[in-house]
Length: 478
View: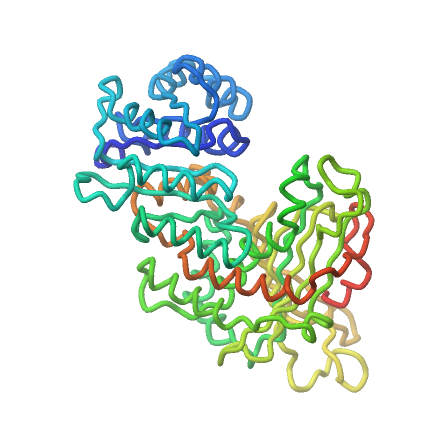
């Protein structure tokens, strides 16, 4: 790739963030080691703290040694990478900071020019994003500059706002400075191999595609469980909560992958069109529907976390029943469970098929289905596809037991081991928006969550024990 890809400068706002330390710097360094970066790319870290270039390089070096020790052990490659690092001090509300950034981009030291290829990565809280985008525009670094001779791209981390109104405002600000084709709203779930395989699994296999509808599928269950708490993010979680932190983005993106119609082609917007249609079709919530569609929980001890109010009603668990009002899925419930401090860390999707019209091998009378067929898509930590079906137990009696056939990605395929951030960074560099979220989908997702939040306003979450599966009342959701 390095022989064909144009050189560019990547500018990371929030260069001291945990995301930059754990994911961005290691991923970019590894891509460079593997030959996926151009020969003379540059990386400019942006922060509010004054720092010299050599101080920044030493800081990144230490973080790479901590978070990617095997790769950083190659001293020669690490030195070569650090020579490509530069730093710009920017107070995000001060135009002078963006002028300094512009000067750094155009400096002779980096052989850059104002309108060459630039990628801006916003590794910052969403509340700061509008100020940064405006600052880039005012400094002549936006994507709508008529004099721009190269390309400009903006990568924005989730969440995109905290409700529909703020998301629309953020989209409006971005639209003033960048064109939508230059904007990459990143959700790392969309870079996971099992998530990218969902569309292939559905649309390229003749034994599944004809069955993927309300006539054959009884329900869908999406689980996003984490076995740890908020990890010191009390201030953020008090504002966001589980619904905004996980359901609005990861959860609804998995739902669209399972439920979308086949695209007319593999162009990015054809796929994103179908995802947007699903989000438009998700039934909004009201005061009546939330009573039998939503259970909220909070793990015991949450109020004792740092920066958490002692009387907090913020949810750390949610079980939600969604309905998609379209031809394919009418009447099929999509259950979603997500939470912190649950029994184990697992993300999976279980598609349960309807039972045969007459069951000879279940309980007496054939009134029930003892072994419903299921497809289980493991997203993390196991990356698997399993099929559950009934088989006769050996012996004289006609007894049916559930059995599984399982496919494991890691055991079957050997490759370079690209992580979601590797993959999505490469996609953005190459200009492929397929696995990034379009602004209309962001607004549809917030419309769904806002309708839910408005309908449960003031409802206290149920307490649940740490390392359980959530509140007792959520058991009705599977």
